[in-house]
Length: 352
Image 1 (cartoon, rainbow, N blue to C red):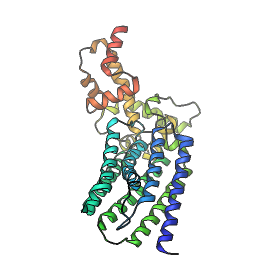
Image 2 (cartoon, rainbow, N blue to C red; image 1 turned 120 degrees about the vertical axis):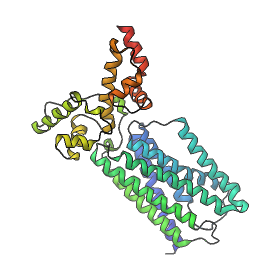
Image 3 (cartoon, one colour; image 1 turned 135 degrees about the horizontal axis):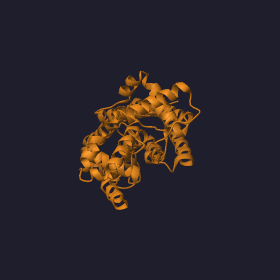
Image 4 (cartoon, rainbow, N blue to C red; image 1 turned 90 degrees about the horizontal axis):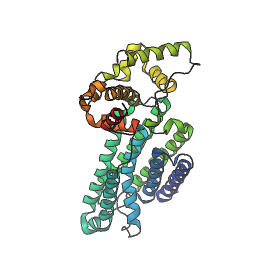
């Protein structure tokens, strides 16, 4: 079998797997933001599998250019996908769509006018440099937020998905830059590209199909109330939960700067993995930051409703409760209560 035939088979296999993954996500998780972004990412990657070419190739036609542009925009979808997958509180904003549209438009302009104008190397280098930037953003936020994830299986699968996708995206972008403007099609690079893509897509599809969807996708954190341990808990776990809640209620340890799950685990003299399991399985939280913030917000609600603190600035209440600045406090408070802190204070004063 020739290089070209093998490459075509690998591309077809990758597209088929991606369409199967998209269909599965649509059937089960189309109502969840992370699920919808998974579908969009799978379809964009399928467009990439069809259009990706390293080195010289046929001139881009008017019909191919939109597909290439959508494939390029998939890197923005990948970045948003990792945000939604790791942060249950993540919400799409209008400017996210603006960034995606700008990348797609730039790729289309590059295909139709910049590259044909004799600047193919510059166009390819600029487009793939953008790809590397978004990959770096995705990897950085993955590393930064990984420790706060309380769902053990989700921690492993998410890291695998992001690292595998980032490695392929980085390899493809670097090959594109290295052979930008080449006068020949680099058959070995295209075959390698197709093979690695197919292998990673197969591994990601297998990994996502193996894990319970509830571990990967969940309802927004504002829907999670402070839960109480159930009566059927084992005695050892119940004692640990009681000790944890004493730390939160009596010592208000959530007020401390840079509090981590490692800090709490050390105070309780247990391994981090066991504390993650307790907070997740016994108290119903999937993210450590949400667990801390709910305690902070409960304290802030009490302070805002207290007539004796009516003149205390909102920012003072926020920082006393453990928030580092007003913006995150306002967002977390409104996500939990449905109103801003100022509105909450006014409502409580009116009801008094």
